[in-house]
Amino acid sequence: MTLPQSSVRHYQQQQILSVETATEVTSIWAGMTNEFDRSWASIAPAVVEATSAGQYAAAVSGAQYVGAVIAETDVDAPAVARVVPIRFAGGSIDGGSLETLLVGAVYKAKEYVGTGMAAEAALREAGTWLQDVVMEAVRDADRQAVGAGMTVRPRLQGWVRMLNPPSCKFCIGLAGKWFQWNQGFQAHPHCDCRHIPSQESDAGDYQINAGAYFRSLGAEEQDRIFGTNDAQAIRDGADINRVLNTRIRGYSAKQLRIDPDLMTVDHIYAQAKSRDQAIALLQANGFVAPTL
Image (cartoon, rainbow, N blue to C red):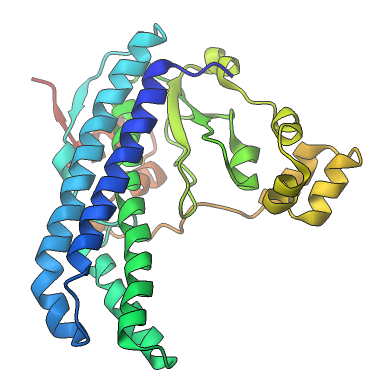
């Protein structure tokens, strides 16, 4: 699978953004004390601001990436509207507020204390949870901005899923597959797969051979990723795609909560009956604006 260099650079940039944002939030979280509610009230604005800034930077990068990759791959797909990166900051993947998502770290700390854990240890564990949530929020902002950037280019038919090894078996099963422009990106926690905007006729250029990827792994790693039984079945000659499809069946992205007041790009894809309607909804909800 030959990946466009712009896709590789974008992935690397997003990794840096998510890690830097999480690191900053972790530093702020260090100001928490055993008075959970009071100390959270004092640091919450800084935590939200840092995470929002990371989301904004990710969305800017995502919007720029679409133009860069189609230029590199010679896809003629001019935009009919421009992405508004700030609209992707300050919220969660289900359309809720960012602060509501992040305060979950305080609830986690309280849960840990409720199990008998000391406050200091509970804060460390909750801080790890918060770090993961922040990184995911930044990645989601990028994914949705990339999705919007593809949607406003009517000539662009869809995208191929880019695998970033080491990967889980679900992502391996989806890697290299072509999806239409309005098919939401299925992402589990810690997923770092990405879109490659593409025409369907070009999708084969980015496909991955799941069997070859499996064989490139050592037996211990095969067992860890696929499970001992499935890995042994594949080593014994079972068709890897059938094994993967059996496990993936029923696996889906986060359940979307359709709420007109908390619209997300994924909600729009689920509701729009046409591309023109999707673009209109993106514009009505502030994700894109008319081109200058």
